[in-house]
Length: 516
Image (cartoon, rainbow, N blue to C red; front, side, top):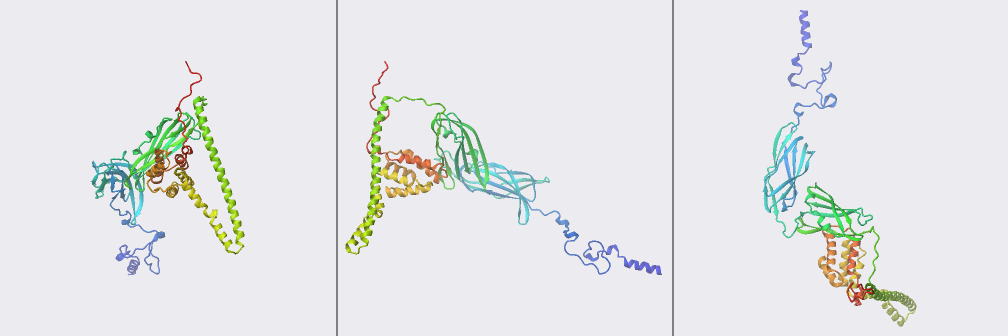
């Protein structure tokens, strides 16, 4: 009986394995509880604060891959390049991407660069974005409807899946302007030039000429070559090489073309690098524009000793006659200059005398002194000097007034400020419609100065207009102003009706030692 009671007590003290966690209660962590007060269920994350991983959360729930297609524009001209961006968004990395582009005779697709990948977080989840860019070029005008773009992707595990956009691409394409040749539909075109090795230019010594073009809306390989415009008789030109690039910047296609040439002067003295002019169609403003690199004049030193040239007797006689006339004219100009300085000194003395008389009369208080005081104020040179100067300027010949206006604006170093001041002075001194376009203003200025070359004036003002409004750049505005002043510089010989004899004109003197 005692043995039975002993086994019964042992059975009650030791719990059965099936009753270790009865009724689905919270299990114990860290073994069995000790004796004493029963252990309560723990909260938080046991095992050093680490969160247990549930079987369902060990593999995160993914999402279906999708496409995002963007276009730089939905309206374009024929042969205008658009950028189509394709983004393949997936929950994991991809092993392969095969893009199925729409097939159409109305457009051409070309891939730009290589695909790129990046990770981003969106809506609390991590996404892998693979980007591809394509150049879309419409070939015909009208409304173009393209089917959706689809992509076949291959995951790292080898699974293949096709992803579609389910959206058509609609384009409205305008025809090209038939008067514009070549047809370059762009958003922007900038050109610049640089010369390397021009520290000391010598006859026969090569220098490097670098022409850079950068366009928005075209690849560098599609930009025209400037070689045909750079050839000239006074130098030889050889192509060194061409570098072209095509990049995507802020969703736009940016192309760069760099041409390098070897230029060899053929003789000593001044030689000219011709201007480079590229006409292009501004697709944003719907108008024809020009980007210009102005011509540049350089000086080449001769590496041979200059030959002495004997001047014919007839030329010596003509030059002596011209020199005598010029000497007389220079003497008259010098005399007028001295008289002008003397008159200025005399006017200062008279003004000082007027101030002294005014002071003396101011001390007397009578009607006569008050009258003289008022008359002296009316005769003040400081008061009426600017009116006299303006009146004298208005009495000058119109070419002199034009020269005065240009000289007054010569202090401005910015092309826009220079043109604004010149327009103001031309309206005030010559009563010209200075707000007319620069091409018409060139004709008006040529009429004011008969000695000016209309073609050169028109070309100079077109260069200025291109630098201000055409996106070009004027590398040396000071040199441009010098060339402009040479065209409107006054010619006193023409006022005095002095005609310089032409070389080879008139009767030739008989040679002293005629050959038999």
